[in-house]
Length: 513
Image 1 (tube, rainbow, N blue to C red):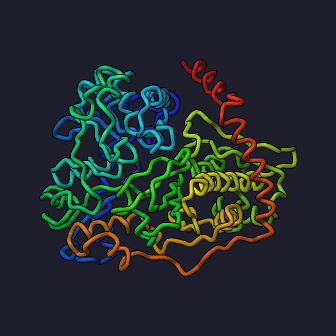
Image 2: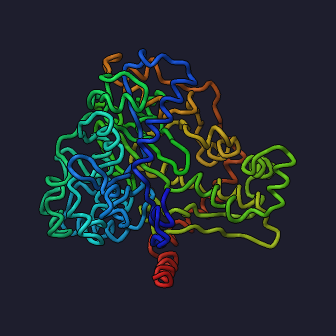
Image 3: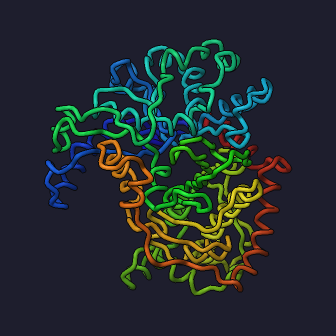
């Protein structure tokens, strides 16, 4: 991630910027894929298709042939020419404008996104480029999701997938918002879709094209094999854990968490990231919500606030620091540390959709220790998930149990039990430690014709572990009390009663200007 300064520059980037180098993605194709083929001893001739998943919205400006603007000397030192990563939150003013304009004009599609478009989504970032770097915007012949860009590099064919378009670029049944709406945001933005994007969207599981000779050479695969339409890392996980029916929420847990559930009916849910028919599974409504900081919060705490003595103790016990803090925190009973936290160190995605909110820890004393805070931060993320569950259930969308995928549930069993206790839901686990990659492979199998659709692929290729984490009723009683305190803080700081977090951010911006 590029969040301090551009490569070759010592000029600091402003706060809330998060960029990437698109060449890193090509290097993955050149190095990682051949390495995986070697280590797995798979004959490349047996590979019939390739699929990828990606963080979203992660977008970039390019020329019409797909050349990223940041590759060009003219634009390389302009940060707006680089990939804007999903966690780029500097487009919050543009997100505010998008939301205010949509409400004023009575745009019905806004309800499909929980009433708010996030700073993380496509048009917030595109509008930021236009307003802050109009010369870069004018030079950009294409604005495209990075996942679609990688498929373009693999096939030589530009395609746009229906998943990112639906969840991140405001495409619903009637297509993109009206030209008049984009013009109301900025007259120069009126034709953004027709001049820099595409109205042709490819369905998930479809074939985007054939692997080119060049890309086949990078990857050590046969040219001409099927390349699946691009997908999103969270959404592609749902069939990988066989959650293709309603009533089961999938949580893809890593640096952030995405919450996904399939529904049979269309309902507006506060703060959801979107609901798209066919966005996850064909002919079903796919709902998405999320937390923009989970594993990143634990990493921040370890990197910046844990005393040296805990690292030394972890080394003596032949554990990494996270394992040691987890083991120490697990010795406590719920509520024993006397703390409650808000999990907004990277803003709030659902249900408040506000990147300008920040973290909070309440209840600390001179006796508070690092394991206490570590546990309180885990609990805060679990409370955030419970808030999301209640938003869905409050709209009549059933959630009977949870499935956890991603790195966090693989590594942290205390976290898993806390989530079960806080939510009161049984939690199942992905049968693959690389569930998004498995889901991508499943879509590749469909694109190559090995299965008729993703449901059939899920039946054969999807995996769940046998184990299950069940709620502890006594722990649940304590967490209900702590959750009530969390909700009080959630509403007080998150719904405008006290905007101190936003005021502090503004003071910070002024100090850094």
